[in-house]
Image (cartoon, rainbow, N blue to C red; front, side, top):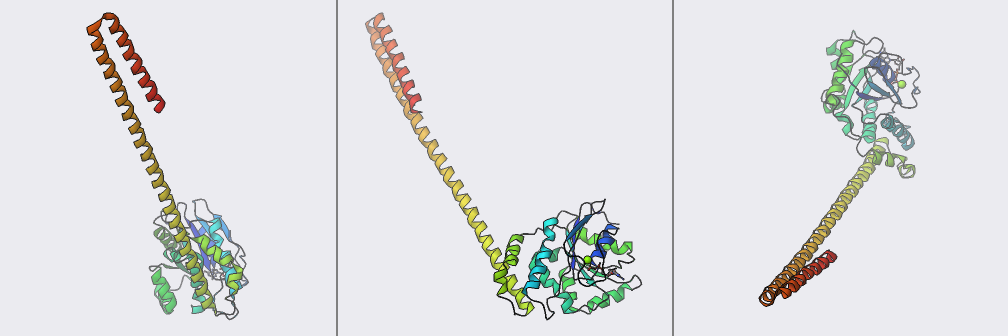
Length: 324
Ligand SMILES: Nc1nc2c(ncn2[C@@H]2O[C@H](COP(=O)(O)OP(=O)(O)O)[C@@H](O)[C@H]2O)c(=O)[nH]1
Ligand SMILES: [Mg+2]
């Protein structure tokens, strides 16, 4: 089997599509609860790990958005429960998007892709692998391919995922099928070096948490609700980017201002030093000339003048040090 080394995986998809079973297949144990009950057995995200260091998060089942009774409340609560997976598993390496191969792939089935895109942003698709469960091991590869190729929306999504589609029979998983999944997990994450970054996830959360604002969309068709929410998220992200840019510019201005002040202070200091040095030189010179004149007069006058010169230089140094 492909080596895993600390990879983190989030499993998403509709209720009953085999998410928990897939998690158990990958971790080779019964750690997630599997259920035949379509009323979502997994209510909260659950994180489990195995010894070689593979982390798997099972998420509550997503709804499609095209059923007649879907409203803002359901889309919102669904999205918020899935987004929590990032609280327990930040920077996952891959998203396994499960589909039930025992059912027809309908647009309704695939509408959850739109919900996942408002939750995780388009970047999730760069880390997504489609996993079709319930495909018996006796099903030929060519028949499996024909099956998913018949659904245009799935075909397009698989293309968006760069052909990352796998099959699995969770009741009797084959090593080659599990290996293919792990191979893709390694591939999308560049062997664990490039996780999904969850950039601007706080903006997504803020929009989804704003119940009052989303209430305005109640009564709209589901696909329009999704569009509106996606738009709100884009606006929030654009504002966030603007704020970040403003903050960056303010910091730059502050830095430039500090540099200017430091330069000015250095310049002033230089001016003071050169002024003092010229004062010392002048005093020294005048004392020396007085000494020369005195030399011509008498030894006593020499001593007197030399003393005078020393005192003059001393005063100059004292003044210079005080100016500093
Ligand atoms: N035959 C078959 N049954 C599966 C497969 N995967 C899941 N199941 C069954 O489908 C039902 C729902 O699976 P579960 O993992 O709980 O789905 P979830 O709601 O997406 O977590 C359970 O009875 C599983 O045993 C599979 O690949 N093949
Ligand atoms: Mg489950």
